Image (cartoon, rainbow, N blue to C red; front, side, top):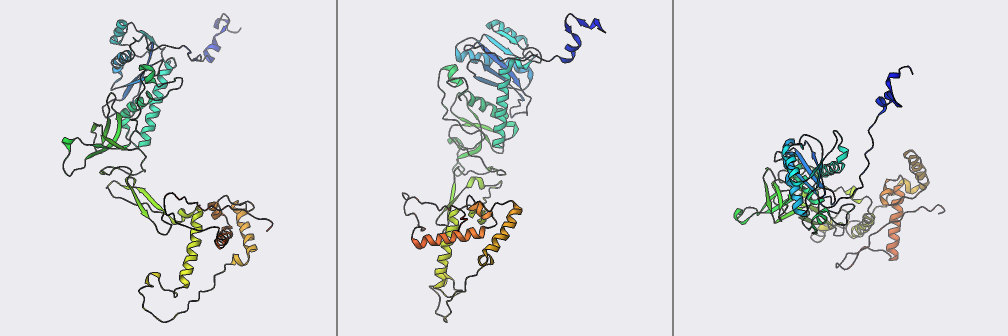
Amino acid sequence: MANAERMVGTVCVPCMDGKMVQAPHPRSSTKTTKGELVHSAMGGPLTESLGGSIYFITALEDSTGFITATLIKTQGMASEALKPRIRQLETMTGVNVKRGRHDSVKEYLTLDLKAMYERKGITSEMTALYKAQQNRKAERVNRTLLERVRAALLDSRAEEELWADALASVVHVLNRSPKAGLDVTPLEALTGQSPNVAGFRVWGSRAWALKPKKQERKLDPRTDVGRFVRYTVGGKAFRILEYGTNKVFERRDVLMEEKPTKAGTSPVGSSAGPQLKMTEDSANDGGMDESMDMLDAEEDGGEKKLPVVDSESKDDGDSDSLADDIVDEERQGQNDSMLPVGTPTSDVDNAAPGPRRSTRRPAPKVTWWEKDQKAYLASGAESAAKDGWDLTKPPANEKEARACPDWLLWQKAIKDKVVAHKQLGTWCKTKVSNEKQKTVKTCFVLDIKHDA
């Protein structure tokens, strides 16, 4: 050896110094009883909430997975926030907590927390420095909570200051939801009582809260409009954040709109109720109803805007639209053959008798592709080859056929088929006279006959 002094026994000191890595952290398979072990961890810092908190501390009961979360303004409040959570778990279970596991940081190493542990006989299990993996369950709970809080804020487009209310709602729902490895919910496993989930609502939904009788006036709206932000634990009410202010109030009689609103809309200044629909009858399409949620159409100033319907995009992919067009063309042709050319149908009854005019209709216009279909197919094949189309395979539906270069041929074939069915009496368009009758939509099956 060139440098024997650096060798100690059979261990290569340079190899240890240059290659040592941390040992794996195996999962613990030890099962605990109710109230035996409580995990605790702190999360943050986050955006300052409406109450001024930027941190939160969680306590996880190991055997049931029951979670409690407490908001704190500074890290030094962690030990003071943990003590009431331990007392809460002991009250709910009727069993004294035996062990408490948390990080070995100064926030948990206070004299008051140590004195409470000694008085209650709780064993303090501190993790090694910079080894949060030893408290993996509590760290995983904090990660799950933050993921769901982030998703709730993004889904409702709420401000980040509402993270504290979203956190409380997430904890409320998780304790009353099924958990992997348990046959019951964490709350039922802890207390033995099945939770009532009838009051679950979508977080951040627009809410109308009925005003108390003492706050109502004769002609004022009877509701306060706001956003649902939290459940009232221990009571039967919801906490609502009023729009335009930071005022939070609790109400029992609340009506919510739980479906998402469109981007760019603001419900401020409106007292309209949810699920308001406007129905518009259209005589041209057989009486189809077009409904729109009035709440989604309101802008910031309370102005209501109706959606613009594109006729081309509406007809694409609809087989009934093409059949209706064919029927309308035939009806129009029959009506026009009975009237003088250029005379509107609305003026027939009131029109004075005039000079006799010719009722002959001009000859139908024949396009070049109808005269020479082989030339059209040849030109379509060249353009289709450039665009990557395969004209040897039939389109799957009408929408795909409209995008093909040989759409004009498909359109002519569809019109011929509709006319043939009408002549044979195998297809007709009818109106439903009552709700018991069911209509059958027209569907075209497109195929290519290579031996025709």
